Amino acid sequence: MRPWARLAPVPHGERQTHALTHALNRGMQGETEPTPYFIQNLGEAEYAVAIYAFMRLMGYPAHKISILTTYNGQKELIKDVVRQRCAAHPLLGWPAKVRRSGGEGREEEWA
Image 1 (cartoon, rainbow, N blue to C red):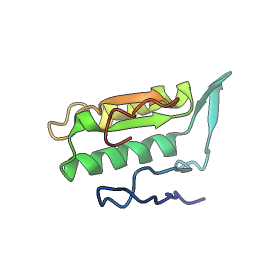
Image 2 (cartoon, rainbow, N blue to C red):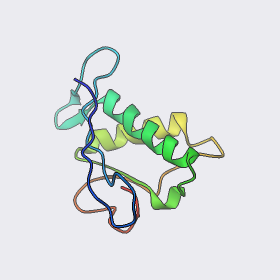
Image 3 (cartoon, rainbow, N blue to C red):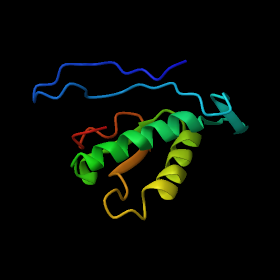
Image 4 (cartoon, helix red, strand yellow):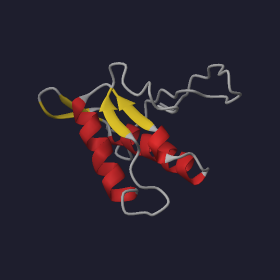
């Protein structure tokens, strides 16, 4: 399967307000469940963090970007990927929030 995004109109002229992904990691595993009810997908986590890094390099401020997911396991995996790939980098750093979604992120401009 390929990552895909759903485009939606935005009043400020941007072309995308959100992206929904289903990405397989290199081992073609997709979702894994290392412990019961702790669902993770490394491909999706790396894809989400890559989009965050791209937005930061394009000049979007970190405090206006959130990464939302539907699973607690995925949230922890995304935090691990951010920690490894972005946290120590002076241009990237941490996003405003990495959360399990439930309506959060509405106070940021980019979720």
